[in-house]
Length: 179
Image 1 (cartoon, helix red, strand yellow):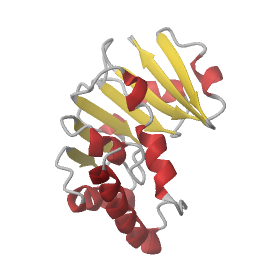
Image 2: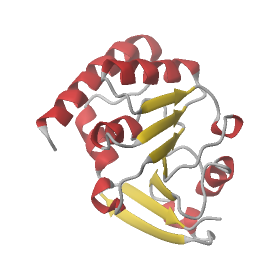
Image 3: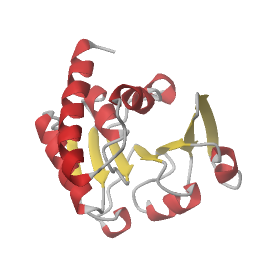
Image 4: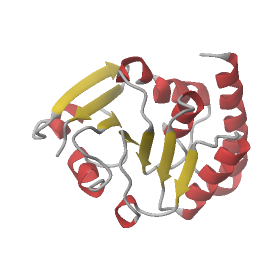
């Protein structure tokens, strides 16, 4: 990764620690492994998305780090908890990430846009996630889900192309061709 990326990660870490003192967004002490976990899928994704939707963005993982690298992609971060969506807006502004739009609300209650890529990190069961994303995807959309040990069981019943990439404790689930 470039020096500029790691400088942005350090700045993000400062902003996160500042917010964390008041709002307790996350308990991570070292942001570097989180950043690496977030960007790992770029190696095997196989395309550069134009529009990415991140569901349940929380403290910004993976979307903020992906947006630092995929500068040509328009990122839409959906976060219903006000303190978290405020943090995301502040972080994007502080990092000059003009490719990020934060939506304060549940994705299922927001205006629909078509995404090339939908990401989510350990938010909910895969089938439920797909359900709340109705209207945001078509058969061409790729889902990139950051999952734990139950990943294989969560996707067994899905009728689509599916792949799991395993790295340490992380399962990166890639789904394509959902209808």
